[in-house]
Image (tube, rainbow, N blue to C red; front, side, top):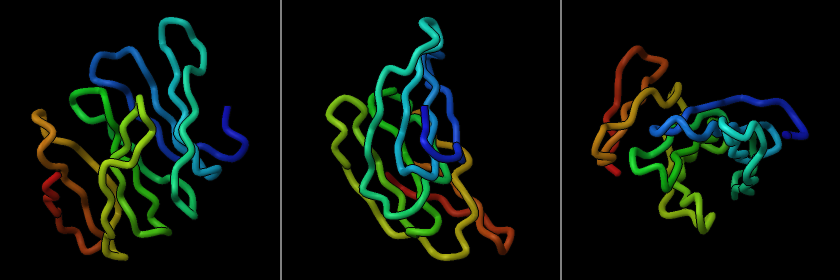
Length: 118
């Protein structure tokens, strides 16, 4: 498991995996059927992971570190960061990703929503 606190969890679209992200800057993939940790992915974040969302294809995952002000899309097989970008400091969190995986929606502390194109 994680060596520090867990800050985010998400369920894969096929209900086969749970992903958890924590203060240890790791993404852990857990098999629901086998009830075991399947994989541990080290991220490039300097601070804790605070949000996770599976991409609809279940091949990658969006993860965020609010303290780093960064969102990354990481391929789950290769563990390669496919892209990343900076987020504004008033960013509050990831909420939902579109069914086709082309965008996701986040909320901000000023009570507005932002649509991000992937």
